[in-house]
Length: 317
Image (cartoon, rainbow, N blue to C red):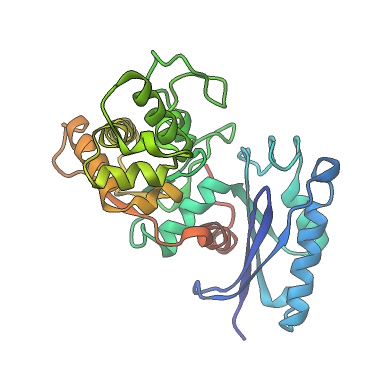
């Protein structure tokens, strides 16, 4: 009988699980609600109960298991401690140690964005590459850096927070992080809409955006494909700042490939094209530039990355 591992992706609404063979084949996936009451005190025990129940269903014991990997939405220190997970209600804690004691198995832990990047490197858009940087463009902008096949989290667990790189120091509005001019304010789904609305205030030309009650990022991209001037400009602003950040990251860690995921990435080729245009403009030192591709694993990136974390041990620097 082969060995197995379990990948766990802890989110603010649900906890996703995947049972994997050691070759990366996903055998089963399931999820449970995230119980955040009482500062998330029941989350780890719920995860342990769900894992043990699934193992019993599959006739697996601890001897059959390599271990468990877990991605959580917050900074993780180099020794595996959770610094803080606002969306879960957690303060500083040893969630991995707690879970490991409950299930009697090794548990590796990482920041969810870094873990998702690890998943895309292993079985997704970055497959075949050891040096991968991922940006997740969703409600916010997350990031993950993988070098030599290992997650880069940094001393305080905030490595890869690419969404909070400052791209516009002249910005007046505040980002959710408290700073101003972060990439997230322009390249997230909410950021694209914010930019489009601001352009409508500053530019009097007609646009399909003016005839929509509730504008979405998808609306902006759809109109941009049709040549709508304001929508094109909003997408161009997003592409310029994303291209700038990727260029700066290239000058810092020089990855093989960039993987773009999250809901905004569903825009597809129009998004890749505008990022590539500005990336090439800002990276002038070398002609051998990193590839920019779309993520492939979607919402499963987290469980794949967590499984890889379990298989590899806690490879975080």
